[in-house]
Image 1 (cartoon, rainbow, N blue to C red):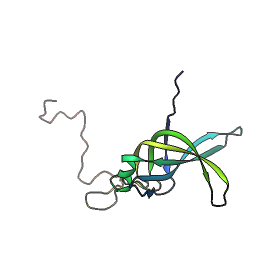
Image 2 (tube, helix red, strand yellow):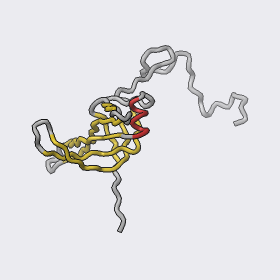
Image 3 (cartoon, rainbow, N blue to C red):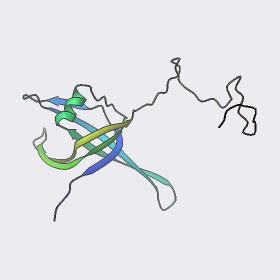
Image 4 (cartoon, rainbow, N blue to C red):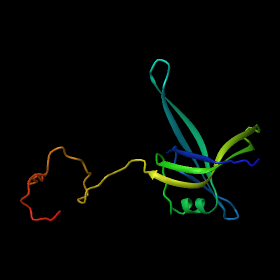
Length: 149
């Protein structure tokens, strides 16, 4: 029987991506991502559970991020697709540790950290509940216009 190792996450970046460049020129991008789930407990109180994921990016995707062709930042809402990998390492105190990471194969920004809507005049856009001065709503029953439709 065949096996499959595929992870799809949608969450927010916990920090700006960190780029490591190796002697051979290869780049590695590391970032953390938070995914959250909300549910009601037995007492009908809302509970939010957040899980943190270590994301690692290699190859062309890492080069695009490192070179600024893809500009990701802390707080961005991201779609990440990849594979789970567990690796062993020795920490600074000499202890053997293991870490599980998502080796990202696809990464796409769904929304920036702080969406800013600008009007054409450079001022932040705010919807007004009042109609625009001089605007007259079209009356569906008004047949005084010459339009054939």
